[in-house]
Length: 358
Image (cartoon, rainbow, N blue to C red; front, side):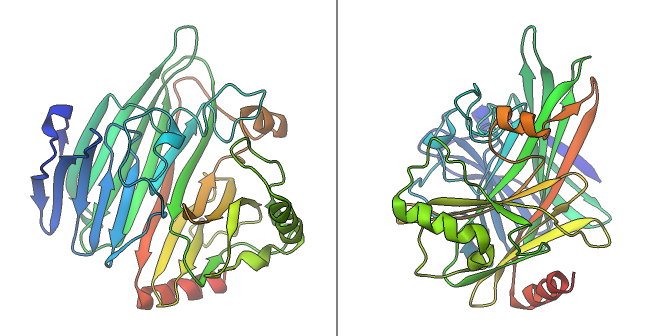
């Protein structure tokens, strides 16, 4: 059993209304006061707020009574194509032709064209498969340039009955007869906890956790910050616990190598909170060859970024020089898959054991 409901912008107004149900699953539509249309996918464990026409971002993820997303001064999404003018989401897609923090020699926006892309198509998918009933948001962003690239971006965010974990995918289809550059990152912005512990299927040694020492244009370093960076360069495990008193201001970024996969080829990352609940991400290491850790913690923003990626986020020119920009053949496609969400204390214990013995 499966079906699809094609969404139109006219379906959304400021009063939230129910669109459909499937078992315990519910889908409702509303529009923020800023004019941005939003979809709520809900089950017995919580809900997702998604932006069907604005980057197909996940604006919020609330499970087991808590919001997983970063603390930010943005209370609502803004209807803008400029990322820093609406930076408060839980998840955004980055890429696909360009990605990362642009250097002076780059001409692309921060993290590429997908982050706030205006989707031409959006739809609700519903059905039942071998894993049970689900509701999902999908859509299509058609990228077209005369004398340039032609591709489609097709994301899906799927929520199942009784689940506090949800599935994210992004398919890139090259509609040109010629190869296209490919850079992609799934940018997950969790709330940086107080006295929370980060667990990962990767070593904590400096050889595997390389601290970014380049300074992006949006970062304004202080002498204290530069001294902090110098210390972390040789001691990345200092960041394994995010203490309540810690200040990561402006930000720190690690490029994490030697990520270990389980027998199914997946890497696992967790943030365990003092009460036992956890934030969780897993992904296929064959699709994502890089992993990026981002921590920013000050009075205006608190975020732990868990960022599976095809490259490092230092902009197109730098990644091209490193050989990190992939090529997608003409008329070919590629799919990236991620699982993310929340774990209660009991399930957190199970996943923690799995990570520690890997």
